[in-house]
Each structure stands twice: as structure tokens, then as C-alpha cells.
Amino acid sequence: MNQSPFFAHLGRLRWIKRWGLMRNAYEENVMEHGWEVAVIAHALAVIRGEIFRRPVDADRVAAAALYHDVSEAITGDLPTPIKYHSPAIRDAYKDLEQKASRELLALLPEALQSAYARMLLPDEIPEEVQVLIKAADRIAAYLKCCAERRAGNTEFVNAEEEIREKIRQLGLPEVDYFMAVFVPGYELTLDRLVL
Image (tube, rainbow, N blue to C red; front, side, top):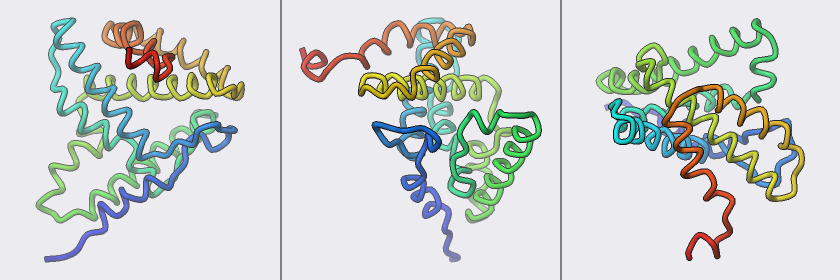
């Protein structure tokens, strides 16, 4: 049986810092970000099915969301303003991400590759799943900006406003529901949360 460094690569996501070009009151790494996005994406899928009666496989959404940034184990994190600075940079980075994901996938034993391709490769992930993961990714970014603002860090104020507007423009009822019902709780202190 051959050994594989696949999960060792994923374990290194804890060392890759996000928001690298900004002053952070709270450091965030890619591993914890992936967990947060997976939890939010799962919630969006459940809300879509249970509240708005448009079922989607919430477990598939959560699993794919967990892996949504694993290519960064090879590429590192490129901040969004840089990633989308120009069409040439955006396209080159997307190509790099896809190649990195394929390299990671190739590290797995062949018998496991098709199961993981469903989570690692964008062309294997249904559009309705990708939409919810992208929305969850934006919500997680928004929550990060809010946490920085509450810590007195004004570095994230513009990003908070811009991301909130992008979330609003998504026009997804499950996202609007999450923002109205769950996001206000993030502003509460521990004393208020446990009452």
C-alpha cells in the first residue's frame, strides 16, 4: 500500500493566513475559514430546503464547502482585491487553482480519486452547490470584517460595506434569511448570548 501526503497537505492549511495585505486584530487561517464556510453553506442549504421548499443536498454542500480553498495548500492565499485586479490575473489564478486542485487529487490513491473529485474540482460540483458555497464564503468574509470593526480595527470598514452589498445583490432568499436571522447574533457579547 502506497503512502499519500494528501491529508498532510490539508493539515498545512492551518499555517496559511488570510487577509494578508490588511492589518488584522484577529488572525484567520484557511483551515478555520473552511470550517466556517462549510457550516454556513450547510445552513444555507437547509434553509433553502426547509424554509423555501427548494431542496438541495445539504451534506454535499457542506462537504464541498470544506474543500473549497484546499488548493491554497499549494498556492497560498491571494487576497481578493489582487485576485480580481484584472481579467488576466483572475484567469491566471483560476487556472493555477485548478491545477493545484488536480495535483492534490492525484496524491490520493486511485480508488479514492473519484469520490474526492466531487469536492475538489469545480467542474464536478453542481452549480446550485457552487452558488451556496460562494454565498457562504462571502458571508464568512463579512463576519470577519464585522469582528474586526468590533475590535476597533477600521482597516476592514470599506470591505464590510462592499461585501454586504455584494451579499445583498446575490438575491438569494436563503442568504437574506441567514443575514436577518443569524448574523445579528454575531454582534452579541458572551453575556448576551447565554441569557
